[in-house]
Image 1: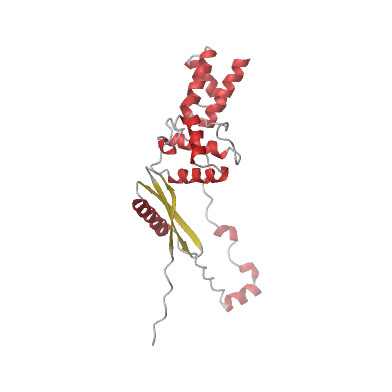
Image 2: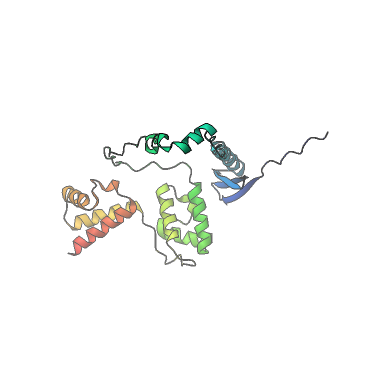
Length: 248
């Protein structure tokens, strides 16, 4: 008797997303019961990047929840019980509300403390680099056009020289705000945190405000005690408020 044929193992797809002189980004994906699960890997070489992507994919596959199993319906009441319920409904089971679980305690707890330091930078920037490549395709820019934009914003024409995560995120945010076919020579530049902090220092000096006045203004508008606790967007808004105060 011939053995039953076994179903083929799901195929794994490998794609090269980014490659330059310093890093390679590889995407590995696999279709599991109609759902595609993917992972990215970054390294100096293509083989090492693919190995990292395969390891992350395997971790995601291992962590994926098992398929849902339809619960087996509970058996109905015995005929004698059903007959008794039909004859004497006043002797039915306890009210439904007595079978519900107790409600969770929703009383407010102590307020969470705001972090005094920004969150640490991630070790893997492959997701952000892939997003930058997608924005480049949307804008219709090539490497030379991106290099011109980077030169204006960061003082160098290469994305590989973005050595801080904050600069990479600022570059990505700026690209997302641009319209397709925008001119990199005149496009709006990203907001960089050091520049924002330096601008607020200049505005505070023009207002002749010391630390006490600046802190009081910050607490009034943002309920925070330090500019380091502000996000980049909040810091930009803080500078706008200082400019309005200076104009008055």
